Structures are given as C-alpha cells and as structure tokens.
Length: 287
Image 1 (cartoon, helix red, strand yellow):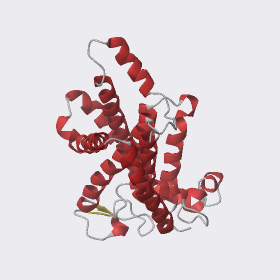
Image 2: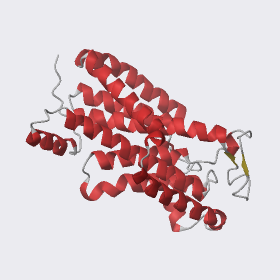
Image 3: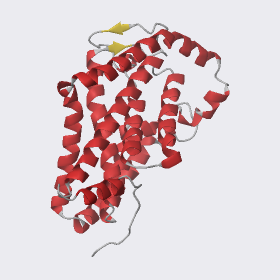
C-alpha cells in the first residue's frame, strides 16, 4: 500500500468519525480544543520574542552542539556509505526510503502524523478520554509548529543534500535550488521528536519513556543513511522538536492546573498527577 493510499484511508476514516464526534461532543469543547491548539502553535512560533536571560544558556549549549556536529558531517556520511551492511543500518532499514515494505520512517511526516493524531483526538473525544484527546492534539500541534519553522528555514537557507554533494558547507542564502537543497534542517526528526518529547513530558511512561525518543532518533539516522540530511541537520531538527514538544506539554499541564480553583491546592495537585497518567479509552459513549 502506497503512502497516498494510506493517507486516503486515514482521511476517509477521519471524515466518517467526524459526524460521530459532532454528535458525541459539545461544539464548545471542539472550539476550545481548536483555540488551545492554535494557541500552542502560535506560542511556539513567537517564543523567541519572549526569551529571558535564563534561556540564553541552554540556547548557547544547543548552538554549540550543532557547531560541533558540523565537524563530523562528512565523516558520518562517508562511514554510512562504507558500512551499508553494518548492524546499525540493517536495524534501521525499515525506516529508510529504500525499504521494500511500508516506509515506517514516513511516520515523521505530516502525511501520516496529522491524520493519525486527528484520529487519536476523535477517538479520545468520542470515548470521553480527555487524556487521549490531548495526546492527539499535542502531537498535532507539534507537527504544525515544526512545519511553520521548517518552511521559513527552507526558504531562507539552501543546503545541498548529501546525496547530491560531498560538501556539507554547500550553502546558499536564500534557497533557490528546490527540494534537493532542503537539507537544512531535518523535518522528519523534528516532527517525530516533537511528538516524542510532548508525550514524555505530558505523560508518565516509566521505563518505556525512552522508546519514543529511540524511534525518533532511528528515523533521523535513516534519513542520514539515505543521504537526505547531514548529521548537523539531524541534530538541529532533534533539538527543535524536543523544545517544541516540551513547550506544548507545559502549556497543556498549565491549562489543567488552571482548571481547578486556585484555593483548592489538593485538587490542583491531583489534577496534575492524573494528567500525567497515560491515556486510555473509557468506551462509555452517550447517545
């Protein structure tokens, strides 16, 4: 089944479920969800304007990490070409574009993430599981936030993908070479890392907390192995995605805390503890 077929099926399912959503959930709830999600995206996009002096240190560390990674861009690319049959690249082979089966790595694109997160949101609202609905909205907001930042970056800076150039510093400002010059930065890992970071900060996974991060990192490695991005592009995408997910989770938890009366501190604490529980279906549907 091709990506287009999968997207068509998921979109059809969402359209079918939408009528059920309208019947089961109040219109005001849906409006609030839309307002909160759009507010989350806008907050991410405008966050640089609200940076305080406390934010400069982690920002500087992130810039330093990216700068160091640029020094191994060529080395990493050469190693991956020379070690196509290595254990690492065989493990991540299902995530690569060269996979002969479904491209699991495409889970890092909006083609898959948006329909899936939309379906999760609808399932949460229909089953009256606010935690599940929030999970869908959070990952959706993460993908949309990443999309806006990435579009600006793609038009502002052109960087040749490793599969068309051996020079990691083959850069043009502004970008004028089309898709093959969109190496900066990796959108696949930014999208998937935003969702992974959101889920880990919003809910308690216990020992499984590392799994979403590992999956996102594997997607990034797969894109590097396919010659779509340099290591530094992947590092930038990972940092951006992590920051986006953490910010959106923080906003959701803050809304939950504000939903209780300020004087009821015990209720507020209980609400925050409940919010961190992994969402499940309740399947108590009212007609």
